[in-house]
Image (cartoon, rainbow, N blue to C red; front, side, top):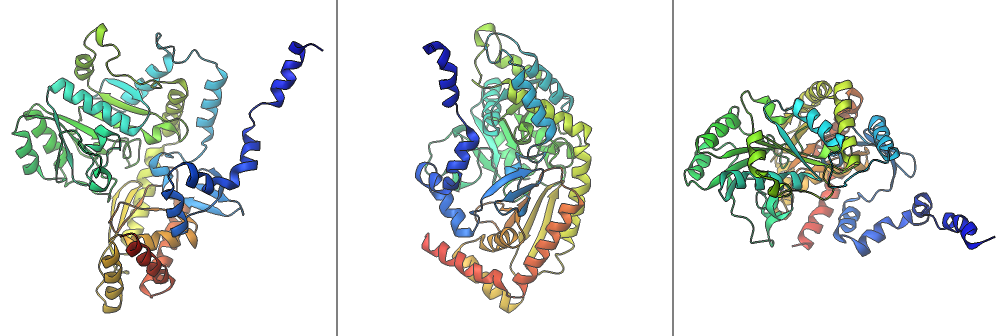
Length: 471
């Protein structure tokens, strides 16, 4: 047998085998992260008991190595809008891979980006054009660049507690100092209080503002401005020749019970809109900056400027196929209607508990983006324990609720932001009454335990010790 004839056998023996690699090395997951990635992540997970080993996932559920199911009320920070491994999205990705398209030649126009842009714009009737990137922060970066260029002004306003991403431009409009500290100098941007029209107008009068970027509902704390605020802010901005940028990275694609969060308020028509997360189907990173025709035509004003803003992997076939499949599922399975109905059921049932639990201060949000806020209790016994936690670190009580939800009830949630006593629920948009029942029953059990002085407080002592040790 010649060398050429034996080559296929040799090549096959050396093929990459993902299943075998995971079987051989999967148990090293936490050790590998500690050694090669962010070493604080496994440390944090071990500390709060979140160091689970999940073997598979489907829809709104995970399963661990023992076959126990876990309800996902986090959706990968909103990425898993349709849950995990939706069959329509999986098939679309298999199909696009099997098609062997001539992708990313850089010098042609493939059909999939145009088709996805057409679909997105059908949900955005006042907007005209789309730029596809790879993430939410990249969509924001594009919007910031476009706004600065077309207005000729340097400054972008943002809201206190805002989160728009962690790359340098989007970090400049991040309202949390914990993310910004140590990364200065950033871009010349200014924070205004959410809903404060006087503060907004004061900054606009300086004449150097390109835009205001705003989340219709802030992810940090699940906060929104008063009714009519976005419309009034839009009018102020346009009067001063500045733009409104809506960051819909988390609130878009049905999360709040409309396709976009800004659509809850009549007359709001942002100049630029940023989307990402759920558009990916949970598989292929994708982001989109959507804007008005005149903005795009001014940015791309000549053939010399055809690549003035671009992305190496932007508009790749896999991402475009995933996005098209996601929008198809949203239409065919009436996802937005489900979000509206299920979200109202979940929010109203949780809100009804505020009279029952003195440490449950507020339940707010829209659709399946719900904030549960805790506050100082009235009774002396609970108040002394609450004060102990607050003295160590604000946000520990919310963490005390999140941990038993996972450990005792197998429900994954998150604290909404650093130093916040707020839990944020952003489950997959496909959840229904079954998941609402499971969460409300589990939350009730945890709150009963907290108000009875049960095991939750033992864990609270551990958190206090950890918080003091980290000072």
